[in-house]
Each structure stands twice: as C-alpha cells, then as structure tokens.
Image (cartoon, rainbow, N blue to C red):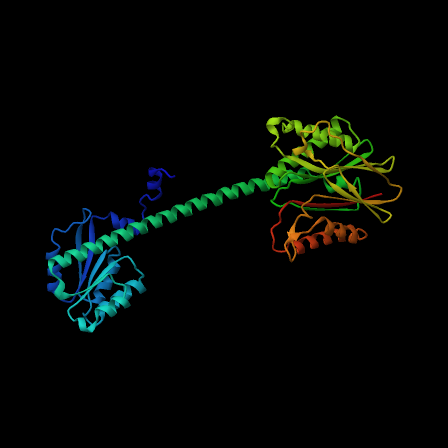
Amino acid sequence: MMKNKDFKQLFAPTNSPLTKQNQVQKWKVLIVDDVEDIHTVIRLALGGFFYKKKSIEFIDAYSGTEAKKMLQENPDISLILLDVVMETDNAGLELVKYIRETIQNQFIQIVLWTGQPGKAPKKEVIISYDINDYKTKTELNDDNIFTVVLASLRTFDAITTVESYRQNLEEKVKDRTKEVVQQKKKITDSIKYALHIQNALLPSHKSIEKLTKDYFIYYKPKDIVSGDFYWCTENNDKLYFAAADCTGHGVPGAFMSMIGNTLLNEIIQEHKLSKPSQILKKLNECVKYMLNQGGAKNEANEDGMDITLCCYDKNKRNLTVACANHTAFFIQNNIFSTIEGDPFSIGGIFAVKPNQEFTDHSFSLNDPCKIYMFSDGYKDQFGGEKTRKFSSKRFLDLISSMYKKEFKKQYELIDKTFNNWKGNYKQIDDVMVIGLKII
C-alpha cells in the first residue's frame, strides 16, 4: 500500500489553470442580466458570503454578447447567474451553448433564471441544455440565492479539484513513461553494443573458410543478442567447429555463449585435448565449476548448453563428431545419416552426475560430405495454419529436400521456410542452422 505522504505527492498541486483557479482568494461569479436591479439584489443577498475562506468577486454583464467578452477576460469564472431573455428571447440559452460547445468549458457552473418562464419552459431547458439549475426570478429571495450559489460553488470546487488531480496524475504518468522510455533506450543501446562484442567473438568468414568454402550459417537471435553461438579454431592440422545452444536467450543466453566460447578456446589451447568427446567432457567440468553446479545447494541452477562439436583431421581425412543433447545430420554419397547425440547437456540439470562421458562418431572422408548442425529454435517455432511447432520431422524433410542445392540457395530456402511458417507469430527462441561441406 502506498504511504500517505507518497499518495499526497502523487496528487501534489500543479501549475495547471484549474489548480491556480482553486488557489485564488475569491470565487468569481458572473452575473448576466439586462436588469440592473437584479445585479443589486444578488450582491445584497450575498454580502459577507464566504466558502472555504474565500469571498466572492462579482463580475457584471448586461447581455449575452458582453458576457462572452467577460469570459474571455476571466477564464477562471466559477459560476454564472444567467438570465434567459436579454437582447433576444434566447440570448441566455445561446450563451450556454457557446460555453459548453464553442469554448468547451464543462466546469463553469451555470444557473439560469427567467422572468418569462413561458418562453423557455423549465423541463425542456433542463433536458436540452447543460445547466446546473433553473429558477424563475420570483424565486430569487436571499435564502434561495445563497443556497444556489453555495451549492454551485461546492460542485465547482469538487469537480475542479478532481480534474486538477487528474491532470497532475496524467503529467506524472507522462513523466514516468518518459523515464521508462529513456531507461529502455539506454538498456537497448547497451544490448546493441553487447551485440558488437558478441559478433566479434563469432568466427570470421576467413576462419570458417579454413575448414570449407562451401557453407551457410543461418543465425537469427530472438532478442538482439543470442544464446546460440558457433565457434571454430585450428590446432595441429585439426579443424574444430561447434554449434551450441545455451540456456535462455537474450542477455542471459549471451552471457552463457561467451562462457562457452571462452572455455572452448581455453580447452583447445591450454589442455591440448583433441577428441570431441574429451573436449565436451572437459567443457562440462569447466561449466559446472564456473557456475558452482553439482552441489545440493545449487540443484536449481539449470544453466548450461547443448552443443555439437566436430573435428576434421586433415591428415587422416576423417571427421569426428560428438553431441551433447544435440542431433546432427551427416550426408555422404547421398546417404543421409542422423547423428543422435548423448542425451545430456553441458552443465545444467545433469551437473549432479559425476564423470559424464560423451560419444565420438567418426566418419571417413574419402568422399566429400555435408554436415548440418542446428539449435532447437527452428523446429520449435510456432506457426502454420494450426499454430503448431515446425517439428523435427518437417525440419528433417526440409534438409533432405535441399541438401543437393548450392549453399546460397539452401540459405534462402531455410530463411523463406522459417518466415512463411512463423508468419505473424512471435519468434520464440534463438534460431541457428549451419550447413558445411567438407572435402
């Protein structure tokens, strides 16, 4: 619950016209009547009048035309005591329409009176015109005048106070909205800058072309930066390439991707491990250590990554692949093989299991081959006519139907198929699909 002082600050007085109007020392009452005696009677009846410690300042007008001028000169008038019949039979009614419709002032209280009730029947006037009261001049005794003025000023004070609160609240909402927009821009700008850093860590085309010149990389972050990443390096005539899907997306996923990228470089350069299965085992140990996973107090820490890691030995002309909770496709001599990885991730919920072992899948490269690696963002995307996931089967069918085409054409098909399936639905995860031809 908001504290009282905070609530008062929320509705603190502002510099709006209505607030200034409530801060003046007198209530402005405009008397509009072509009979001088009526002005005198009203002034006498309200002699010594005070409401909320404010007296009345009278303003006189003797026609509807003159009253319009007074309204222009005094926009803070609270109450108009208005005769119906003046320079014309309906001059007062025309002034009411001018106030409510032309200058669109809904706050001024208007009390109509007439000495000729037959020309403006009370029931019809009250129904047709936005007034607060309607009396005949025979009712204008001291008590009635005092009562109608007091009631009208009370109403005026109440509605202008509420309106000033509304205006102030609206201003504060605008200010808060402006602050939120500015904060969002700062955060977005920071994330966009982080994107430059993340992109700098991804392998360059020059690095990838050491492994192959025929490839495509379809890389589509959900929220500027990505939890998916790809990585490659070279060590002792061996070329390594990985495609990883970290827990989460956006900034949290990007942090994990940077951890994964850094650890892979460290494992290759410092630990001198060469087999993909050994590298993944070490990566698993390092992630568990860095994120303090595996203990009873940290069982809820599910951060980690799924990854496919390939090693191409140029001397032996073979390809070795290990997958942690990933699947990859291997195609050679038009024979399509699915590499089913080990059913556990790097870190995450499997961190409690000690000495996790991974499996190597080796292929001789006497003939050229193609390998496809991917995160689950593509096949999990909702869309289509029935709002379903794209599914693993559709994805397999897509790769099977296009693998013989040039990689540029494959990229175009991957992109077109994804966007057509997604349609107007939101992208739900980072998306990455990589195709490589290795000779």
